[in-house]
Image 1 (tube, helix red, strand yellow):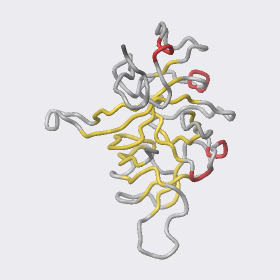
Image 2 (tube, helix red, strand yellow):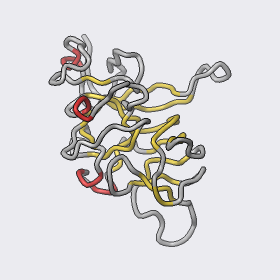
Image 3 (cartoon, rainbow, N blue to C red):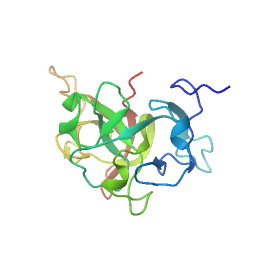
Length: 203
C-alpha cells in the first residue's frame, strides 16, 4: 500500500523534468489520465540539477508540488520565476507579489514551468494547474533580479510586481534586509537569466 504525503518520494513527474511538469485537469493540459488522484499538494521531491559529463551526480535540490493561481494572470516568462504563497495552506502560489499572503515576506520559491521549456505556455495554461516549484538548492537559468543591486554573491529578495525580484548587496550594517530572500545570485545576468542558490523551503 502506498502512502501519498509530503514525506515520501512518490511524487509523479510524468514528463521526467521539473521544468516541463504541468497538470491542469480543467484545461486538459497535458492529457495525463488520473494524475490528480495520486498527487498531494505539498509533496517534496529531492532531486538533482545541473548534471553534466564532469558532474554526473549534479547538485542537490528540493522541489515541491503546488497549485498555481493568480487574479492578475501575468504572462509566463523565459525562465523559472519567483512565486509567493497565496494562503496559509502553503500549497498555492502566485507570480504576483500583491496577491501574496505575506506580501514581500511571502517568498515561496521558483516556478519551474516557463516559456523556454514549455513552448507556447500561457497564463491560461498555468491557472489552476499543479506544477513544481524549487524551494532549495542550485537553480540554473532562473529569472534574474530586475531591480536593486544585481550581482554575483548578492541576495535576491522579493519586489513589488509580477515575477520580479531585487538584488541586495550583503553587508554587516545595521538594519539588514527588509524582506525574505529567494536566494543568492550565483552568476551574472545574461538575457535576463542567472543561476541562483535557492533558499525558500518552509520546512
